[in-house]
Image (tube, rainbow, N blue to C red; front, side, top):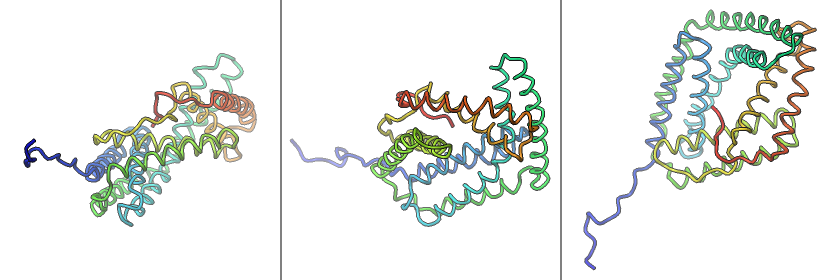
Length: 285
């Protein structure tokens, strides 16, 4: 056979880092736009999701992108934490609405209707306080502008396809280990499992978005597990709002706890009994 010509030589694929950098910038752009949404609560919800996706990608380049990556990640985490009160206040109303759609008992519905009215009042107070201290969430949006600009200072040339695939495999392993701990653990263990599985799913989606396929994850949630984890999150949020600083009356707190605690235990037993046997579906955002 003849010698290779320049046209015969394999062309090395482009480094994935710059594409990942563009992906993160896009997520922060979406978060910025979401925080300007006239629907404050929907905007906050979408912004927090996109910030989580951006942080998941930064975690893929941990140790490679330079010291600025940790600083950007810490600021994004603080920004998301600062929005959690707004999100939780709205999510509580949504949780009660879902419970009302499923509930048929008159007495239970009366409790839920009173709880919803109290949750709506609390949501209004939380939103009013947030917009008074930061009209239009302008300071949060300005912080996103700063962090987006700081992305250019990271070393996006260093991530490699093999390294990124290894990072996703590490995330999958962390998710698997967290799942096993959750079966025998407490609320924090279940929350940790959900967070780690969600991060692994975000990372896999990001790599697929830039054209870097990764092996399938045998620990992905199937639809029934996703649904049950969503129900568990609803019940956990409701129980979190049944403490002394609750917006609900004392009698309604007692009634809500009596309903939510056994339902949460049942949901966890079902997941543990199935072994979570994930197959086809990723975690939700």
